[in-house]
Length: 179
Figure 1 (cartoon, rainbow, N blue to C red):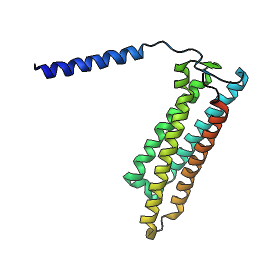
Figure 2: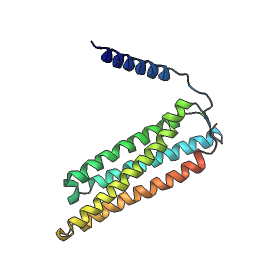
Figure 3: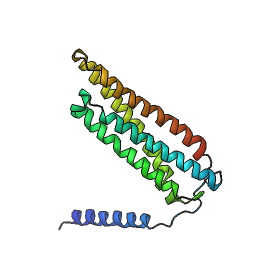
Figure 4: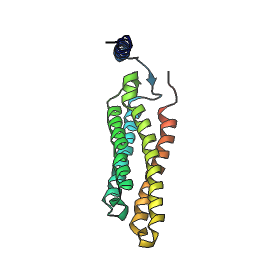
């Protein structure tokens, strides 16, 4: 084994050791303190869960529409990909149901931060999907595909609108006093 290979293996081992040290760091208590009592936290947790349910219902409804673009790979695969942040959002909303008012860093990251990042991912993927759908409608406009495609397009416009509303709700009600 050459000296170069030994140093690269040693570098990899050091990176792994540093990663393990970071993973073993203790949880930071009172990382995020919600500005309300337990009853209000439960209400906001339920609202978060409802947002996740609405995302799933809208994505499911968009999927059951038998539109011509669903038979193309560049529409179908992004649609499947959109389900990942929706599921991740719902998992974060479920985790927030069990959290106390004073969240530790791990609780924050597994609940509210997960919801925030998933909603942002859902927004970005929905905008990309909406653009791809508009391109499909423009390319195949002579085939008369506009009816079902318009319904499908409107469902993703609603998802985008709800993501924006959730972002405003999150900023106003859930993130106004990080410690």
